[in-house]
Image (cartoon, rainbow, N blue to C red; front, side, top):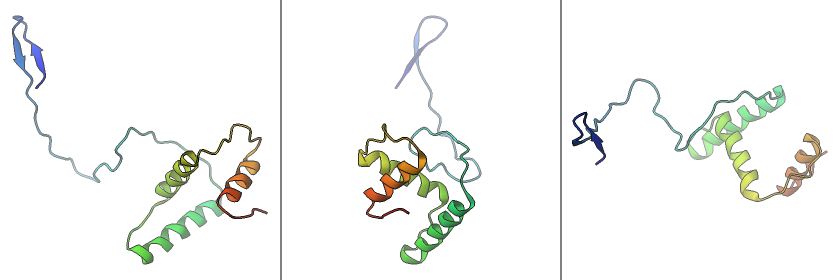
Length: 105
């Protein structure tokens, strides 16, 4: 248990109180996070929504847009792909699609 010094110089134990969860959704993130705004094209939003909807009938769980986007980013990071020499968004898209086994226009 952590100790704090009282004004008299004596050490006293810190009281730890259990806090009841507040109203609303419980936190789902196990690490620090930041909310960011990202511009996506309408076609990308439509596809994300279709992907999220398609998942539910197959496993009974719903993914949301943010979960799909985070998974894609973490997948790119985990792949170890070196993108430092990539010159454009289009080139990155082509390289990622190729790495995933698809050919891009």
